[in-house]
Image (tube, rainbow, N blue to C red):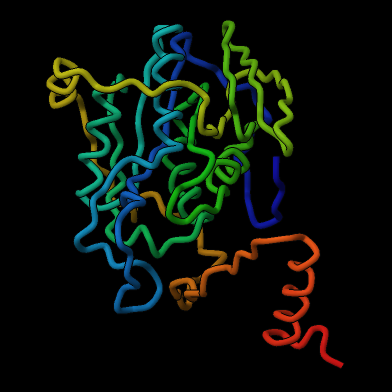
Length: 278
């Protein structure tokens, strides 16, 4: 768990009274298809969102699947939350068709201008009085890739967070998970509800929504909340400019006898870089 003097966790001096029905929240983000051709927008601080295909963030798909499995196992109640313009409702409908019970759409056309601290603050403000036993997020988003939102939400709610989860199980209100560490090592962690989990790729196999479930999703509650009602924190970072990566030439492949290659390499280093120049 991270600690930040600017974050004010809620008071938990008195034990929380938890509902016997397990309450679950999964947070998703709508992102462009990563095969899209990206252009910097006119303001120079984000990508141009016109003419892009949109989908659920890949990491979040694993979060939705794990949340649905937990709901099915416990008979719990599952809410999906997404921040963005009206466009994100289509992505939310996929989560509803996968098995979420209702949706909470935080209406914010300028979501892209908010830093991870603000996004986490919005989610925490929504969740603070709802006594969620388990909160799932993707490990990171595919467009911003900060991997900060989940752990910041947990810190703001003053609950444990377990990141990069690759295996998950539940017994009662106790969770056992494996998280991925550097070098492919897995660490076994146990935690009691409430807790937050950030989901790594490969945690499970996300289901495809069936046609009957797609039709049922249309009738599920999809509540819209103005972002101004939930944004109670100030940004910690500001994006001042954005540029596309500089294009570089391809590498040079040398072939032939190893002895000759060494001489060729030295000659190239002298000519191109001056590294071996006297």
